[in-house]
View 1 (cartoon, rainbow, N blue to C red):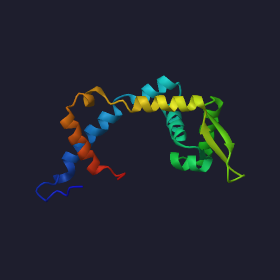
View 2 (cartoon, helix red, strand yellow):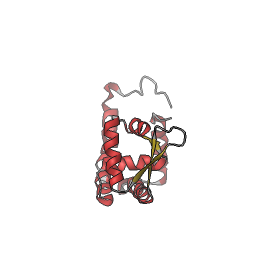
View 3 (cartoon, rainbow, N blue to C red):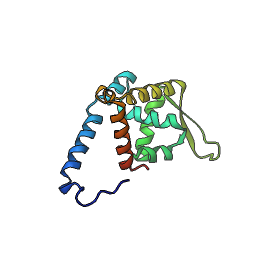
Length: 147
């Protein structure tokens, strides 16, 4: 990450707040959550859970931790997805007391569809030039906390 000098810093964080608002608006105002819910016929929260489970089977405890929800709530979510035949519980291969939750074929397909919708950039972003997109990618890479 490039460190700005004192004359380059955002005084009072006004500019950074404005940029953050623009980024948030671009992401949150593009109706992707609604599109996912409508396409899949389930709430966005259930779709989010299904997408997480499609990455790898998880125990209920792992699932609750990944979703950042309480274990009883995780049970409700998995029960709902199981009733829709989107996930199934199977015996854990190394822990006889635990069950693994994994998506069914239908669940994997729905998770893939959700990923496709969420991964489609808004037209305003797609309209940028290659140079602008490369610059934006570089800048966002510098502030990405996952690095």
